[in-house]
Image (tube, rainbow, N blue to C red; front, top):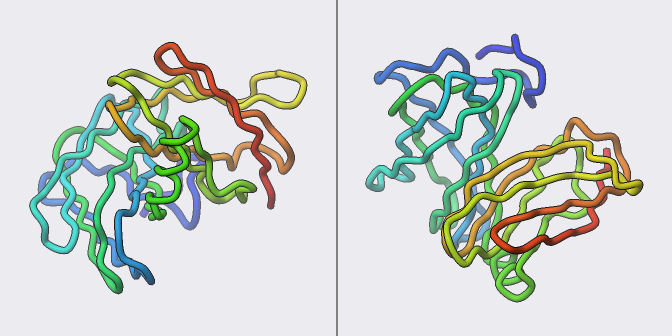
Length: 203
């Protein structure tokens, strides 16, 4: 566990991770079963990285982590899994390149995905606490990139991020701990669409 880069959450982060024998194991407890989105917050200043992930001993999938502009610049990568009720184990193993892993969160994907399919965009939780991730569910007609911007109520840009979208339903995680409590505008541009949502950040 390391804590030599600003911007992490909790006590620190898993750093210096570039060995095929290294893995991180998470034990989670779900009060309900079903499809849930697992979001990993990370930094990858050495460039694009990947990790192999297995849930409850299932066949491994490879999750890609786009490179970040610094070790103190965090982004997120997500995948969806059909969890049973009760305890589950998530094993994240090295696959390629360096990666700092900050945290892992699990959210129920069903309601957000349904809302996104109806309106094209859904954000939750809203209000969101500063220490939590703001989750964005949206539908893309084709694989593309999304430019995400947070503005204050005067239209001034305060934060930005670029995420890769797959064709179909997508759930993204966005950290908001760099912003003060208050009201903001979330603007997302992807493909030919530009959508906005008002968000509220609390302590």
